View 1 (cartoon, rainbow, N blue to C red):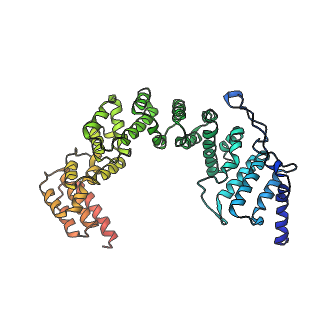
View 2: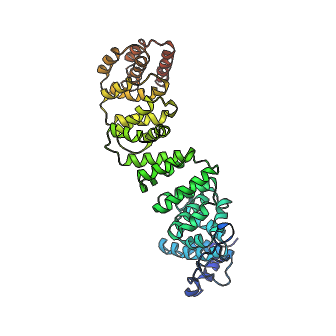
View 3: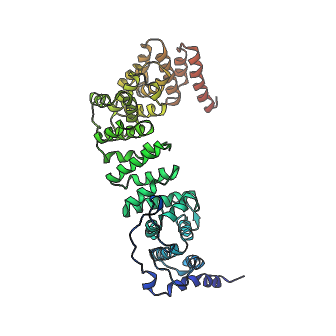
Length: 432
C-alpha cells in the first residue's frame, strides 16, 4: 500500500505540470470570432477547443482530473483555491467539457465531506465563455441528463443567465429548440433577468410552443412576476388575441399586474375592471385575482362575489377560496364577516368559505356567537354553524359539553353523522 505522502505526491503531478506552464500561456485567450449561422437557424459552433482559455501543452483530460484531485493537498485558503480551480476548469472544459462540469458540480454539492443539495453553481463563471461559444455541446449535455437531473437543471439555469447577459438572440434561438421541462426551466430562469423586449419575445415563444401542443401547467405562476414589465393595456391586448392555455397565462399576468396597483381599490373599482373584459374572460380573471398578491380584502371579497353571483361554481377551487377568506378575515370585523358568510348560497362549493368566515366570530366571542346562531333560520347554514361551534369548543376551548349541546340542535340527520364523526376524531386523539 502506498503511504499517504506518496499518494499526495502522485496526485500532485498533474497540478505541478499545470503550474509550471508560463502564466501568459495558461491565462491567454484568443479573440472570439462573431457567431455565424448554421443549419436549422442555430449558430455555427466553434472548434472543439474553447476560445475561453488556451490549453496547457501536453495536458489531457486525465491530467486535469489529477490536478483537480490534488487541490486539497496544496493547503490553499478558500479564495485562492476557488480562483485556481476556475482557471483550471476553463482549460479543462476546452479538452473535456463533460469531465470539467462533472468535477465542478461534484465540488458544488459537497461541503466538508458531506453531500448537500446544491441550489447554485459555484463555478458558473468558469464556463461563461463555453456557454456562449459551445451552446450546442451544452444543450446535448442538458438534454441527455449526462450530469444528473439536478445538475442538468442547474446547468440550464447557468446557461440561461449567461446568455441573457451576453447574447439574448442566441438564448432565444436555442430556447425555441428546447422542449418540455427544459423549455419551462429556461423560461422561468429568464423571467427575473430579461428586459421588457426579451420578455415580449419570450411570451411569443411560449405562445408558439403552446400552439404546438406544449402543456403550460404551472407556467402562469412561474411567470407571474413578469407582469409588472407590461402595462394593463398591453396585457389586455395580448389576452384578447389569445385562446386556450395562453389566454389563461395572460389572465394570470393581468390579474397580477392589476392587483399590484390595487391595494386600496374599492369594490366598485374592482367590479369595473372585471366588467371591462369580455364576458368569457371575467370569471377566469376574478379567479386569478384570488391568487394575486394584492393585500386588499375588499378586492378578494369582490372577486369571490363575482364568481358566486354568476354561479361559476366550476371556478371555485376549495383551496383558493379558503386562502382568500383567511386573508379577508385578517382585516374584517368577525361579525361582519360571519354575516357575509351566511349570505352565501347554501352549496357545497361555498361551504369552505362559510367555515372560514364563521370560525373567527365563534373563537372571539363564543357566547355572543351562540346567541347569533340561535337566531338563525333553521336549515343548511344553521346546521353548519352549529357544527363550527362544536368544533371550536372542542379544539379551542376544550369544552365537550358545549360541543354536545350544539350537535343536539343539528336537524339534518346525514350532516349530523358528519359532525359527530368530526367530534369522534377529537375524542380518539384525547384517548376517550
